Amino acid sequence: MPKKLLSVIVPAYKQQATIYKDLENIDKVLLEGLSDYDHEIICVVDGDLDATFKEAKKVKSPRVSVVGYEQNKGKGYAVRFGMVRANGELVSFLDAGMDISPASIMMLMSHMQWYNADIIVGSKRHPVSRVNYPLLRHILSIGYHFGVKVLFGLSLRDTQSGIKIFRRQVLEKVLPRLLVKKYAIDIEMLAVAKSLGFKRIYEAPIEVTFDKRTSKISKRVLRTMLRMLLDTLAVFYRLKIQRYYKDGNERKWKFDPELQFRVNIG
Image 1 (cartoon, rainbow, N blue to C red):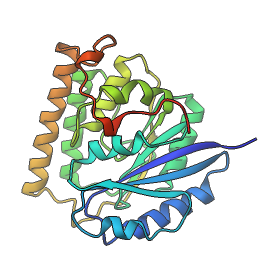
Image 2: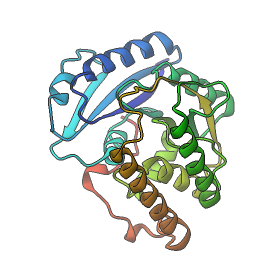
Image 3: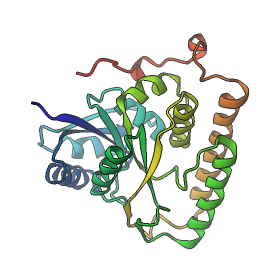
């Protein structure tokens, strides 16, 4: 009997220095750690801005494919671009850069089975997580997720970590409705899924090692956080006031032909 398939989407933006090593490492960890599932890795290069695509294509594993597009469009677009090309019964995404250990995928997979979950969210604030988290980033994260709980009723301690696993049936319902291309793709996917009746959303521990060079609160980071906040408020408006995501509103959804989801596996 053939094994089920896990698809792992790896969005990559200006990762020419590390993407080859990242993809090789993810593939190796999954090959050694998964027993009940085969896997595929879909690396999505978010813009032809450096040698990331060229370096990613050097990976020779038959389980790794590399896709991309010329203009940078944002992490949200890249994740969706990869997900619509996935073949797995379970579909995950994992940020490039390896701040999050790919071994965390096995922990999320275990939680998916234990809870018979619709979605498993990797959480930096799970009591078993191993994280070297800068204090100020930790405080800002707590504030953001308190706001998320108030706005969307999501009882999660962390929605923004770059690792999650979805059942394919969830994505078939959720992906056609999404609009966020950049910063708040995580909260849009989770809030829309919950509004559509997918209530089995749980957290799992992860292992995170932050790069001190990229974890400081710079002006660029503050601008990103502001844009994510604005994106989050836009999701709230569309969900709670405009009712944009509801069944029956298909004529209002803004379809991108590059993001059309293939319902039939394979």
